[in-house]
Amino acid sequence: MARPSTSLAIEARDLVKTYPAGRGKRRAQALDSVSFEVEAGTIFGLLGPNGAGKSTSVKILSTLSRPDSGGASIAGIDVLRHPERVRKAIGFVAQKAVSDPMDTGRENLVLAGRLQGMPRAAATARAAELLERFSLGDSADRLVKTYSGGMARKLDVTIGLMHSPQVLFLDEPTTGLDPEARADMWAELESMAEAEQMTVLLTTHYLEEADHLASKLAIVDHGRVVVTGTPEELKDGLRGDAVFVELSPETDLDAALRAVSRVSGLSEILVDARTIRGRAAVGAVALPQILGALDDAALGVASATVARPSLDDVYLRYTGHSFRSGRPSLPAASPLAGAQSSGTGNTEKENAA
Amino acid sequence: MTTALTHTGILTARQLRAFMRMPAYLIMNLIQPIIWLLLFGALFKSVVNIPGFSGGGNYLEFLTPGIVMMMALFGAAWAGTSYIQDMDRGVMDRFLTSPTSRTGMIVANMLYQAVLTLIQTLVVLGVAWLAGARFGGGVVGLLILLLSAVLLTFVFAALSNAIALIARAQTALIGISQVLAFPLMFLSSAIMDTRLSPTWVQNIARFNPFEWAVIAGRDALQSSPDWPAIWAHLGLLTALVVLTTWLATRAFRAYQRSV
Image 1 (cartoon, each protein chain N blue to C red):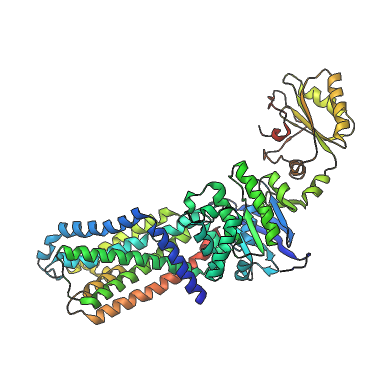
Image 2: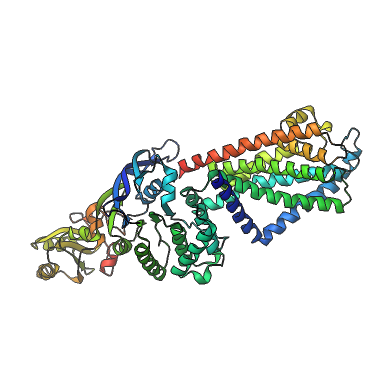
């Protein structure tokens, strides 16, 4: 199944989709001209918060839904003109469970294979192989309703893999899983992508997941692709480290901002609760200067951190709001008198409050 | 074509597996007809004595085919429930993004409902026989009764599927069983000879597919059936099956427009 490495497995062109929003209301815009391309044999991540348009994109590409305008092709086949041919080339794992709870894992797989046109013997053999590979062999003949969340989700992925599709759509494969099951799923997906040589379109609202699994990703926000690239490209594009300084509770925020803004080489200064964040070419050089400036002004500091750019920073840069909070971070000029300390100063939680 | 047949077969098998795995549901399906038959039979026992009643001298024998069709009608009205369950999970969306035959999906559910109807019908007949009812139609009469019940099941199962796909909610199915199935049942000769009903009831009953099935089934159980009437009613039911099946297959488009 050698394919030219430059061929496109997925091509989305200016997809627009609106939904009725109830009587008398304007139609809700789910997609506002979404375009992206995915090279064959890669894992591509669509990253964005709930409601950004990830699932809608997947539904259109997988022939479930039709766009208001725009076009798409899968493995060179036009999605709107030949949906029945596209359906043979893809596997689809919806955000919701795609297994039948009243069938066993094995029955689910054989049924999926046979609906894809596999002869019974081939479907049975492939089902056994996938159940073994995804460590579901022991539960293969139990009803799916008795499966744990992690097991059921792994079964969903194997259902999508039954007929060895050229393109596999995974809509939020790890949402709702506990961290252990999620790590397990990541390992399975990585080894699967290698073994099956397929193209995977993965949607997620976990930055770590996109960073870990996707060789290339598109950040989606409000129905638009705001930036595309490899995780490394996106992070390198920020040029510089993130610096976080959490002020102690009694510190005057405005005075602290004035002091910090005088530090040379520090840009993109933002305030969230009692944490000041900025960007510097080399964080280790900027941090002592910032602390010095605050110390000179006799302003207290609770904690200080330097971090290499993360996807969260990329996200903030391109959408204007932090990924986790989903709300705009306040520009440094905003009055923040009376703001309460959010606590830890840990970079993981800087916007969680 | 062969794809549609294969898909129909494996999807019907899937529903039957689920049915066998829910013993409570199986028992419910067997108990219900007994309750209907025995309670109705007792309640209306003396209607045969009303002057002008033309359905014979034994109410249980008159009632049995009516109860068979009621079971078929009410069972089929709920057929869309399995679609709602598949929609609530991602199963429906997975089928629709695969080459699964749409016609196969509809027909499989109709066949599954028909199997339930056949089981219930045989139970009803068994109970009626134990309670003293005797039918003169023989094996042919029995087969025609079963065929009428199956055709009626097909009509309403397909309709129920179409409504499930369009409305995407269980409450809509409650709607058809209340708003559609109950009036259809009472505007027929299932439990009462319509010759004793007002003229308007008789007129409506003529166009009631449920009544077509009751007439065909009841007539076939007689020792000297009115064959032309039986074939005419079976023909009407068959035409309606084709129409509702086509409608249900079209309803997938409505569903896909909404997702």
